[in-house]
Image (tube, rainbow, N blue to C red):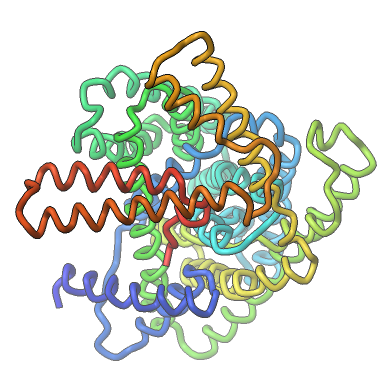
Length: 511
């Protein structure tokens, strides 16, 4: 089969597996990664490979932009202490522990062992987002985990770059030291500058399909430019997306925002699906090239690395929780965390795209490259299966699934926004004003039960809109409405129905 036919067949298989994962309540990265291993071992399976350097940008750049756009800068300011503990300290401790194992068990040179530690240390943004979207968790824990998954790649990739340079040159010269020290601030500054450039260009393409295409071109372009300049592409993309999001709410037309969100959600999800499914295919070549004894040694070493990563992260998170309980300065304005939340955050250490893509980006002459790549794949698969499948039962066991105040917060804020709208209408009269005053005054204040007046208004409204849909369909079948008018009216009914639907009805399931 050609590359296109093979990829098409894999995506078709992925669609079926997604339905299985949804019905058995398993995170889809777990299902797809395991399926990739099985498919890769089938005789005659296609040999699908992607250039490692390209894979890192292709799969990671859109996921970072999509996640960073929805993560407010205020949360980073508020949570910078726990984020520092996870993004810097946890990554350093994990990388150091794995590096020690690499030297002690596998005989790796120190620089190569540190590179392995940097590869497997950071939990992955795509894996974390995929798993977090399938479970109900405390909102504070979700904010910390999403912030960690955005930023820890930067610290790990910087450590990886330093280890590679040390391995290649036998040391780090002053010029390289300056370059590495400027990589993080340089990436942030570059991302902010590119975001301001996009603000200048976006008015020319807003409201067009070309505007959606430009969003992806700019996202990939940020990664490429950052790499060329030797700064952190991860921090560049995070800073870029957050800077754009800071003013996008008021500058972007609603129709364009709805369309853009739909396009990005589908595109990022497709890339994630393909990436997790391809993991098994990328590891097949290495497994088949190893003899039985070498494969057993690699399996033992990989198992030790997996256990080491889980234990180190869990111990450090619980230590930090205890310190934060004793010293207020370690948590800032964040509420006092409990040990249950610490266990939950510690267990959310799934690895994914970054680990695999970074491992495959190793030079061909890297010491024991086959062992390092196979270990990285084992870490990804083991954490996705072990931690991904047990996350929901763990949350329920600790009773954390009941800690969700989103519904109450939405009701309170809707009442606040309705009050702002009513203040705008003060002193105005007329039929149009009365219409909107009545509509905003109907927004409930307080926290009504799910079966209260709000639900009754929703039910009546949905029935009325359904009646409009039936009439519109009759007009279409009788030829009394043109195709263009039909699509416009249908879209208006869609927007109206979405606006009065419950929050859980507005979300499209990933699988």
